[in-house]
Length: 209
Image 1 (cartoon, rainbow, N blue to C red):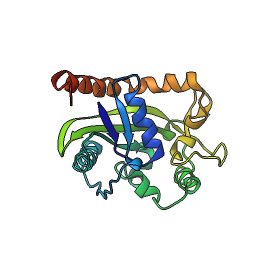
Image 2 (tube, rainbow, N blue to C red):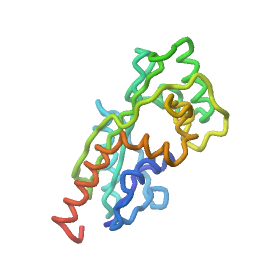
Image 3 (cartoon, helix red, strand yellow):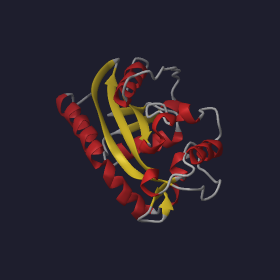
């Protein structure tokens, strides 16, 4: 089975590869390697609606099954200063990764302990030839926003992971080792299981899909 990951964002590519790992019968294709240009307005009322829209529109331009996503970080303590559905647009999409991280840290100045608690909501959607086949949304990660940048060596597109802090490890996401990363990833198991179950159902029904 051929699946196209419907994003050019490096962080999101890594996330979606994680959801497909261990599925040996799948050949993964990346949007940046395809002759596909899309400009999709993410105007849904939920993350799941945005993921559905992306999967459907991209799938109209390829023969592959398309997996798309949308994610949002909930920071309850920021109230009206934080748009759950438009994280990067709230923080400034045109800014550098360092500038984005520093702006969020500035927004959270003066907040302590549980006030810095955050949740990552992740929505996934599968589509083929313009038809939605499946979608789901779950909270897949919980943590805290650090009080400062550990350094400015931020991997491309991973600015939020550079200040997403886990007290149990004393580290931000980008600094986790393989064991620690595995423990964190356990929070995603329900969404991962749901996606892989659907893919297997599609293959069982359509062996040459």
